[in-house]
Amino acid sequence: MSKVDLSQFTFKGLERPVIEDLRTMSAADKEQLIMSGVDVDETDRSASFLHMDHSNVHCESNDPNVEIMDIKKALAKYDGLPDYFWKLIDKDKDEFTRAAAENLHGGYFIRTTKGVKIEKPVQSCLFIKADKAGQNVHNIVVVEEDSEVHIITGCLVADSHNAGAHLGISEFYVKKGGKLTFTMIHNWGENVTVRPRSYGLVEEGGAYLSNYVLMKPVKDLQMYPTIRLAGRGAVARFNSVVVAPEGSHLNMGNRVIMDAPETRAEIISRTITTGGTLIVPGHIQANAVPARGHLECKGLILGKGVIHAIPELEGRVAGVELSHEAAVGKIAQEEIEYLMARGMDEEEATSTIVRGFLNVEIMGLPAKLQETIQKTIAESEKDMF
Amino acid sequence: MLTIEDLHVKIGEREVLKGINLHIKEGETFILFGPNGSGKTSLLMTLMGFSGYTVTGGRIIFRGQDVTQAPSFERARLGLGMSFQRPPTIHGLKTRHLVQMCARGRQVDPEALAGKVNFTEFLDRDINAGFSGGEIKRSELLQLMAQNPKLVLFDEPESGVDLENMQLIGKVVRSLLSGELSPRAELSMKEQKSRTARSGLIITHTGYILDYVNADRGQVLYNGHLCCEARPRDILEHIRSYGYQECVRCLN
Ligand SMILES: Nc1ncnc2c1ncn2[C@@H]1O[C@H](COP(=O)(O)OP(=O)(O)OP(=O)(O)O)[C@@H](O)[C@H]1O
Ligand SMILES: [Mg+2]
Image (cartoon, rainbow over all chains, first blue to last red):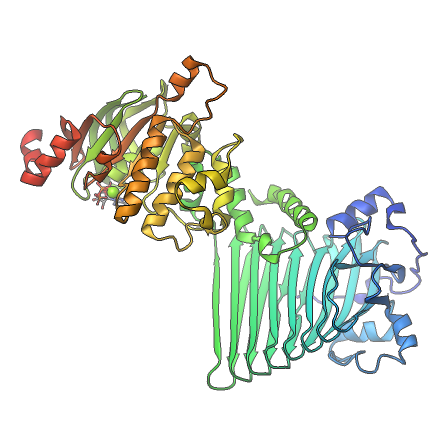
């Protein structure tokens, strides 16, 4: 990755006023929000959170079992959240974590009620509105015992030509028997630098299911979200769908550490480059048995670009079952011809194969969100062929 | 429906079809026999317009149009439909979705069509992913039903199919060829008649399919040449008794 010069970005003074109703935002902003998975009507969401530049501008829960507030409020209310704040990630890990620790702008604190399955998804949105804004957020999610929640996070810039830096710390706690589905849609721009730092801890019988979608250009993104399966029977699954257009430089991995028996891990990524550079590491480490892990990394180079898949399996005790499947290639001519023989022209056939390859359906997202993603894929297909 | 004139085809440097002449009329089903490697599949692939099959001479006229150089999707849209022997798996493409795409905007009910080939449980599976030989046949037929082509090209409908499924496949092929799958209620008699004029070109080794379809003409493809035109059952009988050796004599 190229060296990031954080001094280029404005990390102070971009405070924003409260937005009571997301529908009152400008049409352009709303459109961007919608494309990032946000339901601006909030009818299909149990809670909503919007952080713009340096401020939390909107925070609302429609479900008594979802506690949601700005991280600064949560720190004040809960004595600095001693059990959760900077417990999974080292403040001094790198310059980005340090920047986020020294000058915290906000971020969400979300907690479920023990034993309750939250029906509608919770949505959060991290929005860079001003040109050259630098954003430091710290998010904490606590899924209490035997509760379930789906969080949809959209991260975006107001204008795809704007410059910006997003430094995001996320700590996830899935307690015994809890289940967190975490869907993240990145909708950055060609001049945006992104450094998420995410770590999750899953206790006995818990599940962490991640869906990640990135279709738009982003100048420079590096992340390696890691989940530690700490309790018996815990499960982690990462599912990523990524398109890297020309100008994008992405280094995005996933790591699962299996520290308890009967755990399962799955890392699946589908990547397409149409000119961008994609480095896709993946790492499953198993320290207990029985443990089953599978890593699947498939890449398509359409035209030009680089895909560098680095699958790593690390068994540290006899009896682990880890496997991987990695392939970087092109669309098979035979598949195109098969569909053409059914009456599709070459473009239709290629697009059908690409959509199948990206296989967004596998994420099981709400229908409206899935439609939005399909729409974005359709748009980015213009660069593909 | 289909006229093939002096068709020469090469795969790479090798000539696999060496001057084929064939005419299939509307409503007619033609049966193609021939030993392994004689070029039968190559003929179908060439008719469908696959890359790798280079036409070095001759013409293919389909429904009055010279399609010799046409891309395969144009041939498909003109009404040419083919059942593949070894179709590729397309990950993430559900059978249901492909069936809908085969219909090209016409209303089809994938559940109902799948019901006809006992394939409803497969609608939500990725197309051809882990399908057995017999399942591929049913899947291909399902797509053809949605496509509803004027001329059906079928490569060995009975290969890899158990007896029970043979009956199913035979019946479906028959209904495909009779055109009875077309929506007809709102059509006039004249339109109905034109709708029912379906043709077929079927490759078979065993001849089981003859129990189900009305086919009165057949020929043997031997080493890239067509020969021995006769009634399909007679050809089959002849091959059973004397093998393909006779064809050599026939060709000379
Ligand atoms: N892609 C290819 N490359 C090279 N040779 C090929 C290719 N495809 C077919 N051939 C050759 O062309 C000849 C004709 O093959 P074809 O598949 O048309 O035979 P067939 O009559 O369908 O045989 P079968 O009864 O075994 O299905 C064979 O000798 C075969 O090996
Ligand atoms: Mg063959």
